[in-house]
Each structure stands twice: as structure tokens, then as C-alpha cells.
Length: 556
Image 1 (tube, one colour):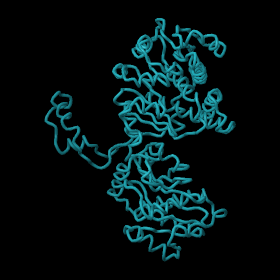
Image 2: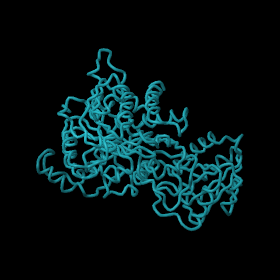
Image 3: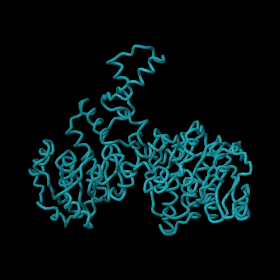
Image 4: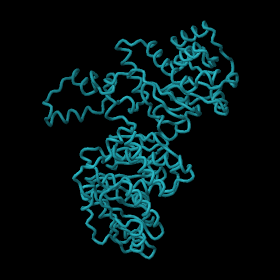
């Protein structure tokens, strides 16, 4: 279902709600439904036989109204409920009505947030989606106190103080153990700046029609514009194209547009299953299962080549060829006797100086850069230029990204016809794009970078983000600090290269394939950490558990 994977901005969520209300759904009914379903989830997380006392922090808007309905439901089930309402005088009409009924039922209110110190858990209903201003004054002090307690917190829709679109902290934010997101995922929940505040994420289905997300029955800007101002020229004429270009930047808003094609999606287990090159055709052979070239390694960073190889091994490519410094050839053969290993000439310091006229276009994918060394000099014209001019999908990682950061090769990258995939961590991204500020809105900045470079970028972080030319965007809602270890990225590049090599990118969008690999990479780390702890997941172990993650995913 689209509504379990799509993410929306605050403006889009507001438009969707307004459309629902305009079609006859009362505001009070939607609030009732959302809050009742949220209260049911809360009682699953905190059953009455183990947790009796609950405090709720109630805001003045509809999030506060949700909280008052939740308070009522919990009270009627037998919980001891206390309400802290710091913005009582500013409450909206519907919130006031729910407050009036809560008082009629005899639900207790407290004057200070410290009066909730004896609660077994607290529900945060202070601010919902759409907050843009910093939290200051007494509310800031309240949240500081709350975050200092050992009392678990459940945030409704989004932790108070988190920007819905960027995930940035607006001065201060509530640190939740659980976040119950209402209706549709808010995109900011999955961005790195919000991760330490959201806790475990759960989506509460409130019955938003799928048709609103698919655009059925909804006029988009172009349709509404033409209905009001019929075009003067035939649809495909040059005059019509010029007319469209002249007006495309004008803001014609009409209800909510379809969000299914352009908004970031959460990569799901079902997406991963459907994207894997499995099962294989019974009448296949190695040359039909992908031919991957790994250009990697140097005398100083031999381990990077090995780890890329382990990643490629668990990716299952039918043929794998290593192009490495000549001195590493025996080492690679001893670890991967089934692979082809080409020894290349090197400079004195052990970095590759020439590709020896390798026929790069005979491969189905190339992964380049892992451990090749950070020296940027003229010799790279003999290595990087042929790679960038190849006509096959290209993954660039690690030291390959450091070379790109010099800036000389972007024009060549932009002109490539085959997919180019960059896999930077945050530091590498900043070196690649010093003019862009990731801290402002990491997802939008990523989309901008991939669009202006004509690439697909996988941005590593607490949550992995993927953008293909700024259009096809995915979020990997998995993460583990176990991967904060040298070599994890080398494994990912090898694994990604192997999967890309055996995937028909005319059928499967490259961004979805990249997100699939990112998901399995994280899932492998999670499984490995369960047996080895977060301290014990080295690159070799990780590669073994990526394969176990594939097996588990297919079996679930």
C-alpha cells in the first residue's frame, strides 16, 4: 500500500486533510478516529496491568485535541490520567470542547510539568506537524525537564520541536521512546537530525483514501490551468511547448497533487523482495548473471579491495574481475580463487597508474575508488577518464569520491549516458558539494546534488537516503551504529556493484535497486550486531550477514 511507504511534507499533509474535510469528513470525526487508534497502540505498548499512571502534555491545537481524546480513552480503560496543559488559554475551539469533557469526566489536571514525575509513561501532544518556530521560554524549560527524566515518552504524530520537513530541531525537542505518526509518514522523521528524538516509529492508519495519494479525481496544476485557460495550440506543437515553458514556474495551486510519484518513499521488505535478482532462471549461466569489474586497492589500502570483494561475493554476480595494483594480485587470488584478478602497474607509493587498455565496456557494471589512494595528480587522467567515459553503470566510492571533489570531472559525469552512482558519507558529500548545506534540509539538498550532477546518490548516515537525479527518491528506514566502522562502505560498494551488474535497469529503477542494497546492508549490520554486538561487526562479518539478511527477507 502506498500510504504505508509514502512520506509527505507539512503542506501536503495539510492539503490532504483539507481535501478530506471538503468532501464531508468532519474535523472532529477524523480527530476521534486518529486518537482512538493511537490510544489502542499505546495500550499495546504500555498495558494497564503493568503501567497504571500516565501523564499527557496537551498543546493548544489539534495535536492537543488528539491528546485529550487519548486521555479520555485511557481514563475510561482504568488508567490514572493526569493532564499538563501549558497553553490552555490559547486552545482552539475543538480542543476546548474535548478539554471541557475531560473535566466533566473528572480527569485530573496539574499545574506544573514536574507534577508528572510519578507517571509510568508520558504522552507528548504538545505540537503536531507544521511547527516552524523555535520553542522558547517556559515550554523550552518543560522539555528540558522531560528529557532529563527516565520516564518513557510517546510522541503523537511527531516529537514536539522537530521540523516536519527537515527533521531539524527547533531550539529543543522531546526525546521519545515511541513516535506514533498519524495517517502518513512525515518526511522529517527519517532525516538524520531527528533520529535521536523519534525512538521507534509506528504508523497509525486513520483511513486516508489511497485515491488522494494516487491523484485519482484530483486535478493537478496543469489540468486546472488548462480548464480555466484553454490552450491556443495543439498539444504537441512547438507553440504549445513554448507556452508551457513560459508558464511552468507560475504557482497554480488546486487541492493536493498526487504525491505517489515525486515524494520520497520508504523502501519496504516487499520492495526489496521484488527488486532482488531472484529466483534465477533455471536455464542461466555465469555470463547471464552479471559481469562486475572492481577497480580498487593500493599498497596502503589493500583491505579495501578485499572488503569490496567480500561485498561483491554476497551480491552473487556471475563473474567478478578485480583490477588492482600488481603487488596485491596474489593476495586477492588467495581470498577469491573463483575471481579474475588483473594486476596493474603502480607508482612508487603503490597507487594505480594505468588500466592497461582494459575493455571497460565488456562489463555490466564497474565499482571504482575503494582504497585506491587519495593522491590527486595528473596520472589519474590515464585511469579516471576512461572509467568515466565507459558506457556501463558506474559506482564511485571512497577515494574515487575524493578525486571527484577536485571538481575537474563533473562535466564528464553529467554527460554520461549510463547510470552513475555515488555513495558518499556526510563528510565526503560536503567535500563533493561544498556549496550545499546539508544541515538545512538534507533530503532536499541531496535531491539538488543528484539533479545537477545527473547521478544517483546514496547518502550514508543514521538513515540512508537515495536520490536519482532529484526525481526518484527513497529512504532506508533501518540503521545501526554497528556499521560505524572502517570497511563497511567498501562492502556496500562491492555488494551494490554485484547486484547492479545482474539487474535490468530498464525494468527496475536504479534508485530502487540502490535503496534495496542499502536496506540489505543495514539489515545485515542489524543481524550481525544481534550475535556479535555493535562492537563486533567488522567488514567480513558484515558481508556474511548481508547474505543472511537476503535469506531472512525472502523467507519472511
